Length: 190
Image (tube, rainbow, N blue to C red):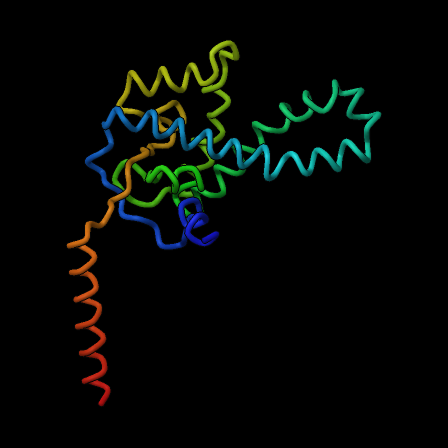
C-alpha cells in the first residue's frame, strides 16, 4: 500500500512525455499552486522541522538571539525550497508535488529542463515572492499576463505542462509492441 502512495509523489529517471499542447492551459495555474503547496509541506515538515528541532535543542540560546525558532524556520525555508526544486527539476524534470499533479518542467521546445534553466527559474523565485503582503504576487501576475510562465520561466525559457497520460488503448498497443519485439529477439537468438 505504501508503494502505491509513494508512486504518486516519486519522480523517476524515465521522464514522462510532456503534453506541449497544454502550455497555455489556464487550469495549470491552480495545479502549479497545488504542486507548490505539496512541495512546501514536504520541505517544511519532512526536511526542515527535524533539522530545526536538533538545532534548537543544541543551540537554543543562539536561536533565541536570532529571533526564535519561527524566524529561523522562515529564514531557511525559501533557500531550502529553492534547492529542493532545483535538484528535482534538473534531475527529473519535476518535483514530488508536480508528479502528484501530473506536471513536468521542460524547455520551450519540449526538451528536458537543463541544469542552467532549473537554476535560473529557481533563483528567480525571490522575484516571485517580492511583495510579501501578497505571497507569489509577482509570480502569479506574470503567469496570468503570459501563457502561464512566471518570471523564472520567462528568464529560463521553460514551461510547465501536463504530462501525457497513456490511455488504456495506448498501454495495450505499447504492450503488444514490446511483446512483438521480445518475440523477435528470441527467434533471432535461437
